[in-house]
Image (cartoon, rainbow, N blue to C red):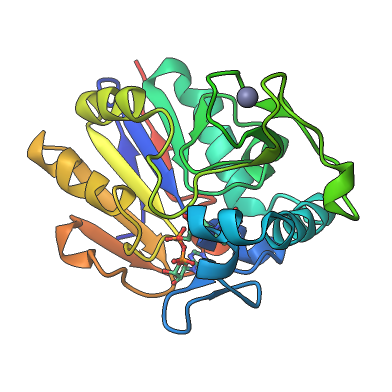
Length: 240
Ligand SMILES: NC(=O)c1ccc[n+]([C@@H]2O[C@H](COP(=O)([O-])OP(=O)(O)OC[C@H]3O[C@@H](n4cnc5c(N)ncnc54)[C@H](O)[C@@H]3O)[C@@H](O)[C@H]2O)c1
Ligand SMILES: [Zn+2]
């Protein structure tokens, strides 16, 4: 398949995963060896890890902040921002990524279902909104407290926690006629189910990545290749 045509009546839902940031130099989460940037997710990305050793968790995400700030958006992030500019309110992006490369490429209509590196929230889940936090902490003593007295933790959805913005995501999937999924292994739920929800409503579904994901059979098309090479020029937009 050379081009995906987007017509006047199409509504596009895009889901991205760690693979879209790989060409920007940010490592993906490798399901086979269970490591993300050299760490076991059980040690850095679960409620139990936070209970056991909050500094170990902060240390990992501080390192992700440093790596994220040094990375630049790649042609895949830019191609999606350009698609949004053409489609306006008929476009919606949901990313599993916690980096801000989509925003820095120009995307605006997006949600981060697994949280954001640039924010922190209360460990007690006391209901206060997340706060901007880009600090490069050197010890737990430097990390601030919430007004309720709880320690601030990275604004990251740990494995086992409920993803953010699910009602809005479900509503957007419900309306979509085309779902484009980029660079996600299809192993983290509920994101791996989005393609099935889209198919139930009759949407076309396209996957872009160098290898088929675990849920490949649910896609109408699988386009094998790197996101930064495939996405620019993949879409033709026909709006009346
Ligand atoms: N940049 C980030 O924010 C980041 C990075 C790593 C992990 N995570 C977190 O860990 C979890 C990872 O799950 P996941 O399914 O997103 O990723 P994953 O690491 O499980 O899978 C990455 C996928 O990207 C594909 N890929 C590799 N290079 C690619 C390229 N150049 N173009 C397109 N695809 C490419 C791989 O084939 C693989 O299927 C997510 O929940 C996410 O929040 C985030
Ligand atoms: Zn609090």
